[in-house]
Image 1: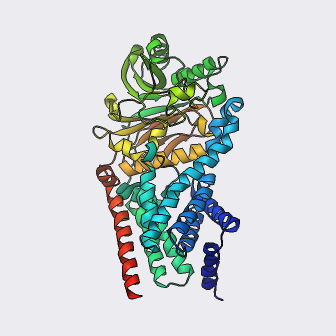
Image 2: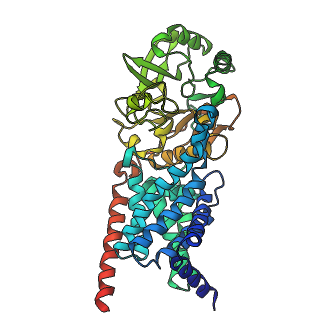
Length: 505
């Protein structure tokens, strides 16, 4: 038997077998596909994993079996890609540690239901390459919106650290996902002896150097503003320790006062341990340390009974020039659905103080930053939602993201979060100032390239020149609408092709 015949026969066996053996194989294939995500970055393994998934899918007996294949593969994929989800539960081990394995298994199995729907839908509408790509693409789009959305670890994210990132400026992260899935289908076809698949693979390979050639220069002009990134490196289990709070605060003051004066200083999320409404004296101290340079700080504020996760622009003398309240909150982290009722049983969000935790701000906004231009502020998790950037009332000159990635641990979570920040810059053609409590803090240019950074797990500061914005991208203008149409067309064509084949029988 030829090598191509062996590949097809093996997938026949996987699709045809039931029970633990098929589940184990699909879990392993899903885990392999996840290795393309940061920090491993083995994107060829991702393409191979999805190629083998397509091989199994193409042999599914019906939509139910296809859905089961999607769920098993997706569970393995998310178990590896989202292993960092256990980290928040280990901050207070005595209180939350027992939940960690259940959180990882529950989240992985829950997100895999999206992929079960995707492959079940794709098979019901005819199967084949178009059903596979259209079903998974459409459901990945939905994953960014359903139940407030969680578009983390999309298949296309494995291409962020390649020249193919440039194509996100046209079709966003879903365009990258389509490239991965189409390459997987073409690879499987080549593995099973279809010569025309080699042409398809060749066409996709050409996108790599073309993407590199078309990526514009986003160099920094000599007169560019200088932004100081402040990274205190406060571990989450120590961040609110009464004996250590002052030390972390003083560290940030010292970093702000060091060296020559920049044009702007940025502290990370919840860097100020005082509520905004009581922080007048604290903000004066910060302004004095900064030499009256404007400082962006993260802190919390209370408005009557509502608590907000807030970004504030502090000017000379400690005056507050602008305030932004985070509006896209982390469910079960910053707030609990039905939180007041659950609080009676001692169940709270990871970062919530009590009851339902934080309240949502009014929405996306743009802040005037004087000579630096207009900033689009984001806090932590908001950076993974491109629709939140498109909702801003007007185009900014740069994105300003503050975060506390100490919640995500020290391995995969912070690097995946950084990768998605790079993706947002490339999608919108905007530079980003990204400041993280424990790292990685970075200056990112409008093509998604990191120009300056501070390593994960180190305290320090870095002065970085602010790169210029590029003209509005196709994605900034149109968003996900083109990819929605493409995926729906794929599914429609899959259905038509299925009917034609059935009519010939």
